Image (cartoon, rainbow, N blue to C red; front, side, top):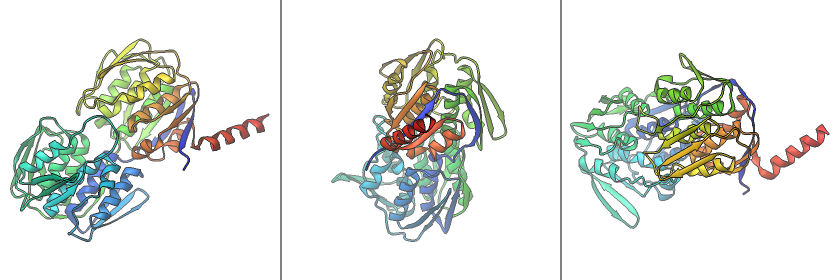
Length: 435
């Protein structure tokens, strides 16, 4: 099978209005949480992504009837006897570990292998397992699999050494079926955590404190399926804002949650963009020169998100002066920097620090997405670069962005998706017609 690529013709100011998709990082745990619910769960505003379809396959293997129609997912659990996630499904996405909590909550047993996903450096699942042990789960490893069993789950006081989003989600989902009260301290505060808690509470759970560092879950309540709308995707919104910042122009994003994006919007303003907010709309105007930012450090929410680090680096490549980025979450989050250098960027990387000296212009090149957000960063850089960029590794983009090429085109970025030979044939035919 011939690999598809994106052909992006950049160097023009952007104009247009787009709707932002539902949040991938909320939709996936909500789908997993449907395992805890009797009756039908209906999730709307679910983005059409390869990771979402992978989650549907896992749910179906666990005895659910999971169907996708447009941006709506319907989930009904029809069997309560299946508790093993096959290895090929675990490898398909990193987020597969989020099924641990709801399977244990509903079945009191779970068998799984190590999850896959983007290669961003060590992301051990020991914190997930330690949290489940605190709730009474016995864990045994053998033959490449992890066997988790419990006679019952019991509420516990759990303190996380780091505010992990995934572990917080698993504790919430296991805790709603545990006996007694679970108190989780140093919990992650991301908006996606609040979205999950709101969903579970709507289903009949009792969770307090989501969005703060202390979350209290009162277990033992039966949950019923409900209809719930997935929150907007703040990282997808930042991706398109960064494309607008890199290329210049005026764009509007609707169906966003600006309050969840304060750190991102602040950084864009520091870089020389004018940002306006009206309800669920974000307006970006970048008609002047870009400015460097002396120091950006990724941090857990409400700090600057690690998922946005690659995106802002694409903007800073043509900013006047020198910028410094420090990555504190994942050690392999700079793999896109070498590809930006192929486009003419001046970047020096040392460990978890990148120093970017702005250049007047980037130029189109053949580049490869090494991971999800790095791929979006290269596309954003291509929007502002002179000439044509060929971006490969689109399976990464497909994990997190719905209709990426169509969205770019809506903003005035001439973008085509197809095989290299097909795209070049179209390009050559168009030029011949002009002659």
